[in-house]
Image 1 (cartoon, rainbow, N blue to C red):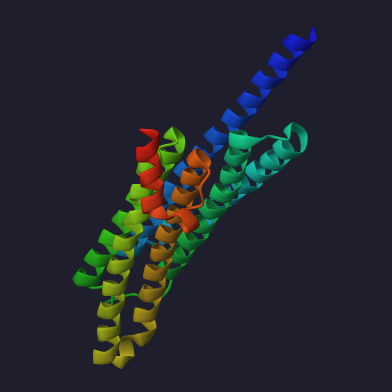
Image 2 (cartoon, rainbow, N blue to C red):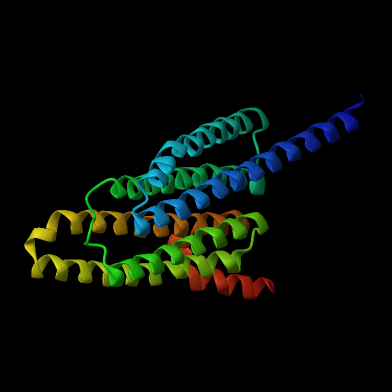
Length: 240
């Protein structure tokens, strides 16, 4: 094999490795999205069997995180990627870490189902948590799509959506605190629901983080410094 063909072979192999990593990130994200749906369903219905399945399946998320982290480390060591390829590897490492953390929060929600919740999660609280859970699930689905398509504008929309989740969480917290103030005997069970709501809110924060990694991947800018408006202004300047 001459030098030119060898170079093309190495380049093709490298591209295949990067594509495999991207594919596995989306696979991991799909598992996390399914886990999230089941955990919230278990919380709303009190389904302890479903909650137990969610807890047991968390190991699938952890295993993929370890596998992808090792693969990215190998790529950096052997391929020494530069520019966009290096940003992709770094974005993947950060993304899988946040997906694994979302998995941890999902497991917390599932564990709360095994606590005493009877009678406290009334129709009003259930509706609010269901709504917030739906918002976070949409954020996760949209940010995974943004990652797959390297869509900066979609990532910006996800980052902004976290504000709505925060507002919903604050409303739920006020509602639950009112319950505790009216009847002190409900405090232990209400706190369990509050921890579950907090875990769901944190999932939204993690989705926002992943959105920021997508932006970094595509334009090489840290949103914490450039700001979302700055990102959009740069896209306009580029004609994108």
